[in-house]
Image (cartoon, rainbow, N blue to C red; front, side, top):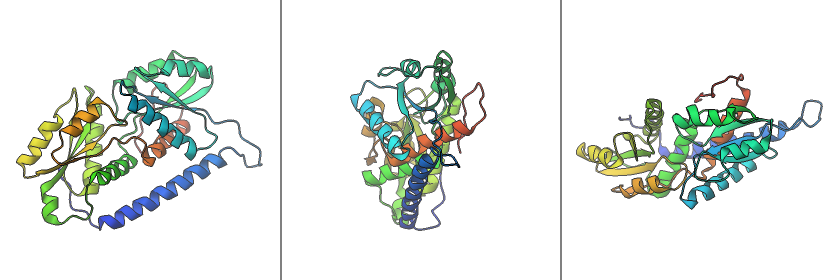
Length: 290
């Protein structure tokens, strides 16, 4: 998968992205405050809670990361009740979080980057077994905000913007994801890889830690065989863990940190919340990617 060279200077793009993110944050905070007040000046009823649904991990860094991310969501949208529920491995488990909400309306936003079994089956079934009147959002990706976070993490790891043509011809990125047997998961990850390739101006190949192919080492080897010896690994994980660590260790050059608590992740969770809340109520999760 290749991408054409950028048509404008990357430093200008970075500046514009930074400005765009600042404006997005201001508008998100303003929208959150205005949503609490009606046109006649009276306070509106409390917005349905946002329940962020994380997978869960045995790595203690994952839970710490998710909790910090939720604090950033609360800071962006003061007054919005924000709760956490895990599919497995960590407490609180999603059924317990939903039970505590009673029969209220709530919006469940998976902290998952692509479509797969958890989004299509696990989360909707857990919601259906509770008394909560739930709206279930789709996967976080693909979305430009994820690309913003991926790019920022690569720059933090040492990716140089504005490189010369010779260096660019030797460079490539492997987008390291968890992997899934669901073919739509690979579609979503491949779309994110293409968006990142468009941003960087170098090939970006999706690869997987488990289940799906190619593996990260295989993808790096294939790129090296094409002369792309300056290989970076972009961590397409929401939090630290075994898979993210193993993928990073395979990098011949640099490896970025997981997306974690990047501000774009908090903005994206709220974007998915708003879209799900605005969508007509159906029995299936809202899977829009815009």
